[in-house]
Length: 239
Image (cartoon, rainbow, N blue to C red):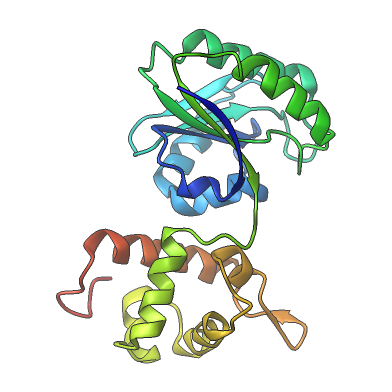
């Protein structure tokens, strides 16, 4: 068992559980939470229901166990517009330490919670995280320093689609509900040697504008997830 700090992409982790940082009003619009929303839309729906019933409070952990990995939603904000609080982060860390055995978790991946959109200095977060997690001896723990240039499985899937060139933009439109004209832009962006990840792609700019908007990003994540899971398209009408 080991505690490791890693520069990379948390979605490449093989850990049994992955930590997401959330607010208590049902919004996952920025940062790592948005990534979780795009990758695990059913988890997001259940999280929203809990929030709309006002059942989630800062300092609590909301586990979602219907996926692999298990997702642990750490509530470190009240409203998304407000900053995180150190006491809420400390409370969630203590709850995790007290309860990970009950969930049977033997490995977990964390981000540096509250250090980006939470507004808390990174060194404060590092100190708290190490205090609670580095001393645990019966669980593997990874803490990720996000690197936007590191690809994940979904981006590898997209790059394979582009490199193999088996589908025309019109065929990709039929499968993904993303218009062919946007697929032409996505393909060109993926072929750019400076595009190394989904994060790079989502921020890819041409003529002062991002090539892919919120709706198409959601459709792209859904399409790539289904494509990856099915491995092969038996026909070109999956959706």
